[in-house]
Image 1 (cartoon, rainbow, N blue to C red):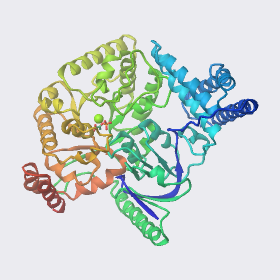
Image 2 (image 1 turned 30 degrees about the horizontal axis):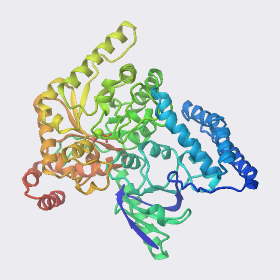
Image 3 (image 1 turned 135 degrees about the vertical axis):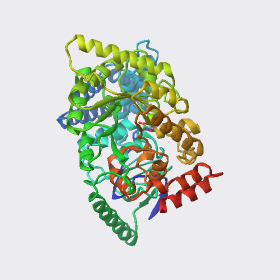
Image 4 (image 1 turned 120 degrees about the vertical axis):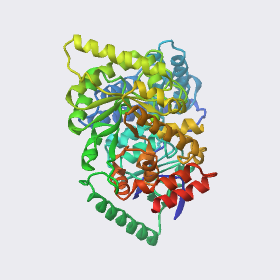
Length: 577
Ligand code: PEP
Ligand code: MG
């Protein structure tokens, strides 16, 4: 039995066998051949290519019916590349002429191709480098007999109840898990507020990230306990520990049942103040959970996931269908956030002047959209068209100055005029709001509130940018503190600005779903919380028992605390009221 510690996600416990991912860092052996060995080595190479081809064929055959069209195109393109003379013939030539092993020859040829693609002017061709790496890795793993798995094998494997163990998972990769009955995942790197972690929460699966070394200590098939609340994983637990965790698992389930009884209850505080509890969603599939917990609507729909794991941008028609479907099936207000790409969220497909910097300070969210009208415009048209079918609003992520707001409002106005002239219906009074995620926006909230119909505080980023902490870097994760006085002051300021301008203010970062902060936020005057559906009933429970007239004293104490320890003491007292 071995325990490993990291950052926990979710409050549950998962128990199941490990499924090891090792899709990177393949060590390439390098040795020379005797002349009599060359024919055998070429044969070994051809056979690895054939096995790889068969794997692609199986992937194609087993592709789920609702998989995006692009998935098949992706696999077909890789199959074609596999047989391309630039890979097949050239690698064989290297084996023969340089008398080296197949792995080394293939990697040498792949390096040449990757360099060629890297130097291409055309961004589309430059992106082909990734395809070469993908195809080469697959052949290499077959040559080396590596039996561990890659995420794109998910389609042809039974993952029910398994716990995925990997070095890292990108948000796009985590979306692969979404439709499969995976029990949990654990990774060596990553932090609790990364987008990967947020997706894990929406999957209602406990997970542990930032384990540093899990892939070294865990073997395929090992029995794992994942404790999302404490951030612990236990490898091959003893019978006693297993029993103890199973008991805890049943207690968590019993608590969930208790909470389910609150579903129909009106969301108001003990002193009668109505509080809106909204849900965050990533895809149309999350709508079921929104309905199950009886949320007041969707306060944040992160549209970027519709753009991920595909080789082309969804066009206006596809987006329109998706947004309309969501607006109709929710049947309550839906806030659609425009594309928030950049930082840790990247797109696979290329587009003119694509920049792939993963810096959170780069061309992200509204900045990227305003620089890429060919992506932004179809999205705005699709959202506007969907607004004819439900109470849809538009929300702009990461606004940091007045110009950005003005530009977006002008483009929306133009788009409306175009739709009108084309005779296409839309809600002419559609509300446009902005996310307050950078300190500049929070400081200017008063001014922003005069231009926008609502504000939504994105604390995940507001904390990142206020405290200068990269939210995906677990090395500085310990500094990520929603209770930091600077963060609380900014939140307070935004709520006040909304009140003054008489427009709604919501909070849609992870803080909204954390019951430790429910009373603090109520005390700061917040009336609209948007969170993953998983947390909504827990938060409702806290709202129902809070008397807002009694919160002021400790909230003021927290705001004026000299140090974090003191602030935490006051928070504990506030939560005991
Ligand atoms: C936030 O930053 O708080 C937010 C809700 O947006 P995201 O987590 O998608 O960046
Ligand atoms: Mg954000």
